[in-house]
Length: 264
Image (cartoon, rainbow, N blue to C red; front, side, top):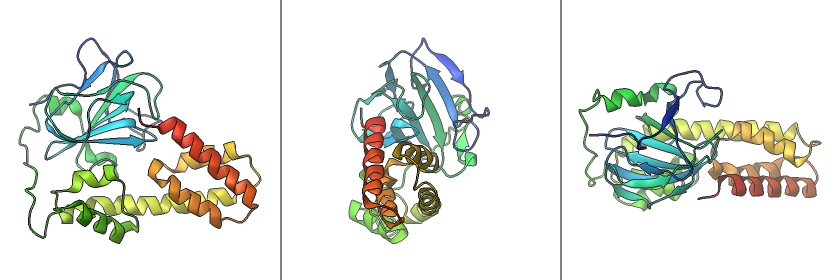
């Protein structure tokens, strides 16, 4: 069973797969439902809810139904915490946080997780609603060495893969999931992060004489996850240049991130 994340009335402003200059992969990954500010956003399926704050998705709820990840983006606020959720439960209030041009609910569905690495990971929400994916694979049962049984095990895996423990929002969905699948999904994300940081280092080196606001604009073109702001600060420290100028860049960048992507 499934439903749309909003009740009528609503207006679909962007369909799945159309060219989209704002989209990470150049095409729109889901469906946009234009609704009034603070309209109720509902779980389209039952599963495990994880709330995430993303520069592009804003206040984003991610529901894993045992087979697919359903991302509900740009919410003004979250209505419930992480954990089990049933289809039809209110999970958020509509907003325009993150990379958004107006109040709406963006719903997309993918096979990879919170941060998919290619457009091929997405499926059309209309097909999902029509029942074309009704054969649901139940989530793995926790237990055994092939599954993550505790958060400590997930932290260990993140440290092994990318040298950081990951955020609580990143770790939560992996408890009870396959360790093998973790490395299949998370490795491309880690590789992408390393490339982003390398690009940031080059950009900062080329922007030493520029004002902090210009540096920020260039940096946010490269980085799409707020968790990486800490790593960016570390990179900035390595770039040649006056300490006071670099401190200003770090300070302005952090204030910008906090104000734009703070939790609702």
